[in-house]
Amino acid sequence: MKFPGKRKTKHYFPVTEAGRISFDVDFFESSQIYIVGIDQLIVDIEAKVAFEFLQDYKIEKGESSILDDKLIEDLYSKLKKENLIIGEYAGGAIGNTLHNFSTLSDTKSIALGAISKNISVGDYAFKYICTTNSFVDFSFLKPVDGPMGRALCLLTPDHERSFVIGKGIMNELSEDYVPSEIVKNASLLLLSAYSLRDESSSMYKATLKASKIARDNNVPIVLSLGTSSLVDSKKDFLEKYIRDYVAVLACNEDEAHKLVGIDDPLLAAEKMLDMADLVLLTVGKRGLYLCGHTDFEVKRETKDMIHSKSIAEYNRYEYSRAMMKKDCTNPIKIYTHINPYMGGPGVIKNTNGAGDAALAALLHDIAANSFHKMSVPNSPKHVKNFLTYSSIHQVSKYCNRASFEVLKQNSPRLTKGLPNREESLEDAYWDM
Image (cartoon, rainbow, N blue to C red; front, side, top):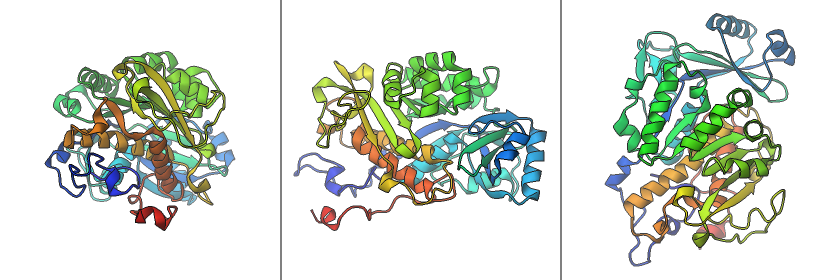
């Protein structure tokens, strides 16, 4: 496994100088480290449209809605005919995140979902597999007769994304295709609120089964909230589900507002920490917040400037590593905020996938902690049962960096890993 962030080798395995294990050792156990994600497998079709296009088809700007497959086909034909389509990619929030995780970490991830039983060269299912990182394992997908789901990502001149989705077979995953052994031995289980949208679907039942297996085996569950309209329509259900199952919650400020009814992102994160253990909250051009819990005994004070917003001195303990609340003797809440990396790209071509990249970086750090604990169990890094390998301050920088890489390109997924040597770090850093 590649370790997260750009740090010198001595930071990877910080045991004693004499007992340090080389980072170059190929640990056999590393093959046992993987994450699992349940996804509604879909293809993202991106198109540039005018605001009038959304109005003509009564599409709500910035939201995600499900339309009849025939209407999706009509929309697709119109976009194709008018030469408005700018790209067709393997998509889905969980699919993007699994791909990005494996791209960043060179580590296996396992996708659970439904895919077309008969795959032909050049069709959507073929393209989905071919354009996904080879470390993403599709061995456990359920083969189903029917077409892949399609998501039309409509980009308006203000760079806002609006999604309309044709379901196809995306909800056909069933409980019998959730492998218990695979889920209970994973470093984490990654889910989206989208798969919990329809309580009558087999996808919902499969997701609930996986959730129970993960919870019963102390596998952290990570939930991405989807869109604000979905959160608004299922607020009570999601709040209960998060309290019952979720360790890590990922959302943007609109979704956070719909969930807890608070406009201020920092106060919203504080409220969400009463439901979950760790919160990744993206705030667009203002960067992101990473907020969690740690034990008072192992808190670490920041060496950077202390800031106050709606919470006084909120970042005082941002150098602390996150823990699950149940593993803390005396839990305290910790917060960090970071502005966009390098001020953000000069030109943002597309915001689609930026949040998925940020989440993938966080998952990489959590999986790296599992890998390190397996490889060097007696390391002082594991005096407590930490959730992350790095401090939330360090993780936020990594999330920010991965997000920047997607924002500066035209694809919703990382096309390559991060550079081995960051141009933003002075040469003196590497010579130390």
